[in-house]
Length: 88
Image 1 (cartoon, helix red, strand yellow):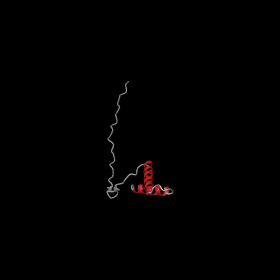
Image 2 (cartoon, rainbow, N blue to C red):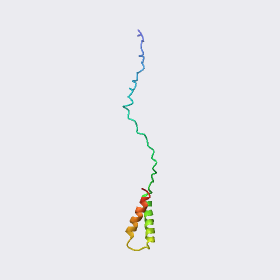
Image 3 (spheres, one colour):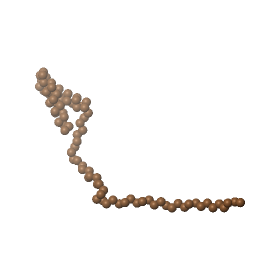
Image 4 (tube, rainbow, N blue to C red):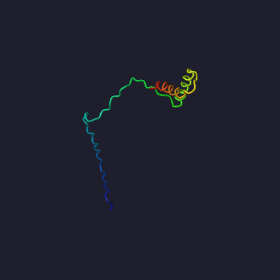
């Protein structure tokens, strides 16, 4: 006795994909507008370059004064102020 082969293949129904709910435009946060700046930002050189530029300026300040002793710190601070003011 043979059994009747009645295999039924279940039919697959297409899955319903839920649609996204529309969010009112007032609830969506907008990105702020990008403002283009007309200011030119000068990038300061590396620390080593600043130090050598300050040293050279301090030397020139001392040379203009005739290398009078005892003013090395003043010369350095004046040169530092001069060089750093260029990059602000």
